[in-house]
Length: 285
Image (cartoon, rainbow, N blue to C red; front, side, top):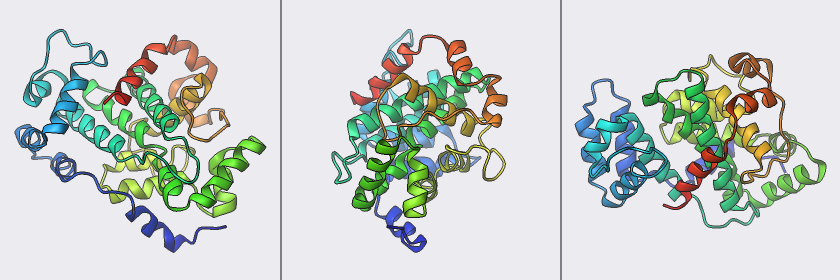
């Protein structure tokens, strides 16, 4: 059954909003004149968020040589953008439903999303993106499939049929969605990113993660291509499952960006078990 285009805003609006503190952090971070001190104060106002951010900063994910005991201290060592993105990632993970009637396994979904996030961040480094900006790629990878969460929650019968059809026919899930619903999870995810007031580069990467050659100019300095590539790499590794049985070939834009096809890029990156272990750290929050 096709989804009426007029339904999409209502579907997206049914997703929970970010906690007030995270919304304020995003708002402050979007202002060029924002002082880091203001962001630190907002995060520290939420004790649970502060605890989780510090837990991650002190984990093997960052491998810092000394313990970090405050958000302000964390800003000095990993940067305000990383602290902002950790808060955003923790909030997004916390919003995932425990179950859904569509049968999308949320534990496997989260594993896949975190795997893509970790590899996308690694690819950012591979592209020469500064460390302070590489966690933007992590967030784009984490959120790339959140349009599926919208469908699983609020169009569960239709989405279950899409999941079943994609598995039975070994077809790409977003193509099945387009054919049967008239809209796919990537577009819904892009609209969700806009409602959440995420930066344009993130919204662009989420919206076009299946077709990085589509849409406006690449706002993310390779972010969209990195998310596409990371998605295929994590599927190849079999880490988690988000309902798409197809591993897509790199389109020319992605091959040009990385100077390789999928197998070539994976050879260059080498053993990714460490990245997958880092992804698991986020599931332990």
